[in-house]
Length: 346
Image (tube, helix red, strand yellow):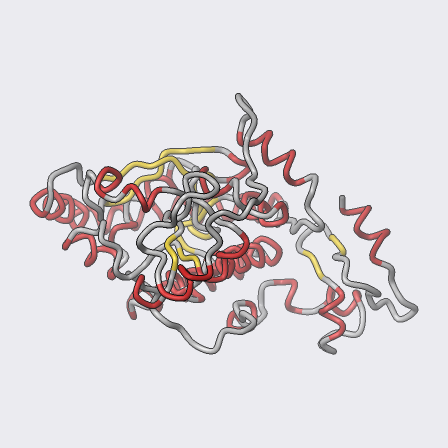
């Protein structure tokens, strides 16, 4: 695919890309818009710039077109929850689709819904869908980077678990006292290469949330709703009293550290998604699964729950293309600041 994209892109006399097709490299991708903006004159300048080494400014890397500020997504503001979709074409939308978003959402329009064949593994599904991608971001596949990243994961997760163990015990007791059900929530998520694993976090919702709010589990990410669809809403009725506090403080994610130790997640990477949502990714967005899911990532330091699903996937793809050890360390440092300030946590 990389060779095909290169041959179709076309390069001018000065080395500039002619056309909008993307050009692939061993690590990352650049496109014609890079040169149209006047930032670089040639592919050579891009390759030799500090940007490719993870030293670029994070606020530039996380810039999103059309974003002028952050608005807390709620059902009253017209925001749509990722689970408030349709169980089949033509179904009514859930009650968390309100305001203009509800009025404009097509309820009977025919659309092509991606699906997995019977018995098809998620990895095989990814292979089939990626064949339709117009471009693909490539991750950092260097051996030195992989070893360094794993060492940081092991040392970081072990130290944080050791320090936070008393806090985690206290939180587990608090959760059990607040509402019936286990303290640890387990769910199937997707990580590198389409591998599924059991995801651990502190329970923040009622144990019977799926039965009480079935309308929030009809996952459907149609193209016409992506710009107004969020993974989390601030007024999600499924959250318990303690659960809302855990989400605001990000303490609910401490058990993720066990996933990091087990090698299912990394300290830095795209947040793991549900298999039910992965099937709605565009083919090129599946590049988010070329690297391990992370405890934190570029999207988490850029806006967290303020981001729509489209914005989060955009930033996750940028991380894959720009992946370096220096960028990982900078994201970890920025995460500490974001968590302490409670930005985008609800």
